[in-house]
Length: 198
Image (cartoon, rainbow, N blue to C red; front, top):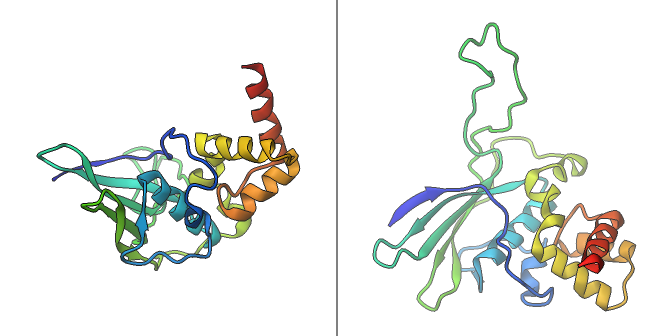
């Protein structure tokens, strides 16, 4: 295997809102052996779980087969994992301090690709090394506050709109089921306007 590191959001894959209901269950606790049909589903599930437990996440490391080069392992972590210098220059005495976002947190979720092409949870660390955020601060984490821009959420907006729901109800539904936790009626309106112009 060889490893790489990345920080990004789910890929632009076209998913239906009802493809895999469990990934939107914010109350489902991760456990060893939990299976997912697709890697993006893992991100959506863990991000919804993180939202419900007042923290943000990011993609951290991955591993590929040395033979096939296919992705076979993925690591998701609390976004406060790792360490960062509090200073902006090499001279702390004269530099301006910034807000510390990395606190060496150990919370994580690892998944591995099985022989039947599913992604299986192989490791889950629940405990954090820092205080968790308030709901108001939680939605400011990057994994939550850019979620409404992903194709997955846009597809969900389209599905709900086609079902006859208005912008306000669409936003409330997305927030309630955990697809996204900061959707607003204006986000929905903006998306539908752009779609109509195409």
